[in-house]
Length: 375
Image 1 (cartoon, rainbow, N blue to C red):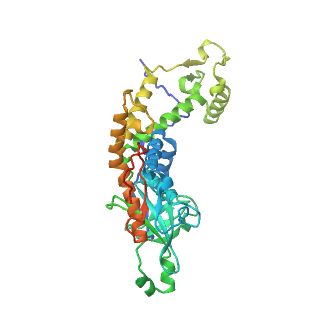
Image 2 (image 1 turned 45 degrees about the vertical axis):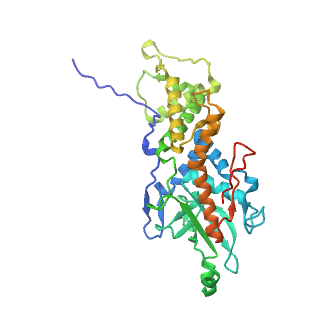
Image 3 (image 1 turned 60 degrees about the horizontal axis):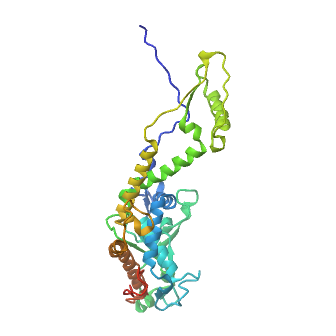
């Protein structure tokens, strides 16, 4: 029997591959005193997108940030007016919350320090880590909001912050003073590499899976017919231009949530050339996605060593008591919240040269408990 080769043509199939998740690899840029942060120097943009599009990740980051800020109305910075720490009118609480968010999203935070004519720090700003790149030893920083785009070469250069006392300031000439009048203090845990790594680094794939599940369900609504049917045209394989035109006309007429339930008519020369429609069958399709979503959510919370109930996400155990909640919070407060509070307080102490310069009133489940302040 003569073998027949069957040619199958699939149109508009774009399989997703893990390579779509960018690498966080660092690479020294030729001719520049700068290390790139991941693929095309845009890895923090990927983390920022995850934060904005993965509900579980956003919930735990925002919740932890609020825990870190504690009673934000009572955050105080010694030597500064209660409501102002810089000329933008930002409060100490504003800077603390933004620094905490960066620590959770990227694994570190940065503060910009402005000195007055006498060389003393007079303003403190949160500097978004998303827009910072740096030299290998973190002694030089570059700020730009257009990394990876045209114009990124216009990044503003800042030195690393170093304490300078009055005697040392008096020895500096005008040019040297101008060079250190604005500087960056970076606070990170990992000093084995240039850039930090977020606490959920091992769960980045799970974050991406959760995001893609949401994208899939959205596309299922907007392109419901395509996601559940295969349409075969049995009268030959046309050229690419004709394929594209058929696909465009078919999608416009039959796909989308607004076209649900419409009748499709097919006109054929005879039964041999009739259009055939196949509906793929996947057993327990919904249950598989539900199980996958729960698994990814659990992996994200595991990375933070957090109990989902602390962030308003109930678990299967509906008997989570008040005592269990308080116990879970105390553990999370000790292992995650207070270490971040301490790092932020230590950063302000280093800037101002005063121990206990920043005071944070911790978040408490008991309004009358009066927990010890962090400073």
